[in-house]
Image (tube, rainbow, N blue to C red; front, top):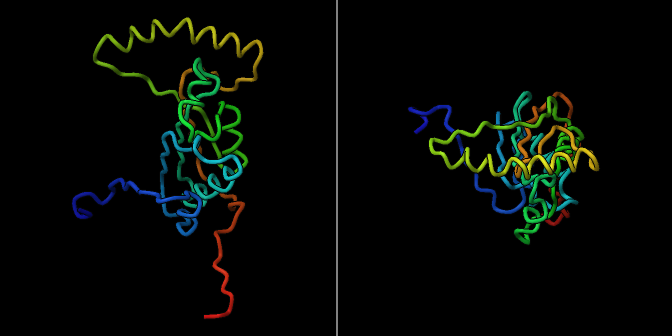
Length: 177
């Protein structure tokens, strides 16, 4: 396969802990995409996991995260739709998390919707008043950054030159070997 697709995309199955999985993969990836994963990471592990993602990227490599938007119109439903959601993100705290972990050029993205049918534009038209109301509510009472009020947040950041916060786990021998 490598002969006909040298730049292929590799999907990795992470058996348990993202941070542990990436701890021995320093600067191995140009791009990491995690769709609807970060909200399942326990709050106490967020810095460790995001730092591991930073560690695994080559300098200038990019991290793209997608997660439910807690400033969207159905935030409670998005957070509590499954018992495995550990944390809910708004644009500001997601961007701060990446910034704290050394990512540069952190920004929220909006992908244009492309649909060959009329369903998507009709749905957008029906959703518009609800999204506008959410935008007004957060503008008056919230601290929204980035103007993201849809159901999903998409953020991208690049690995900079800063070192990671945490060193990879070191196996400590008890001397019985």
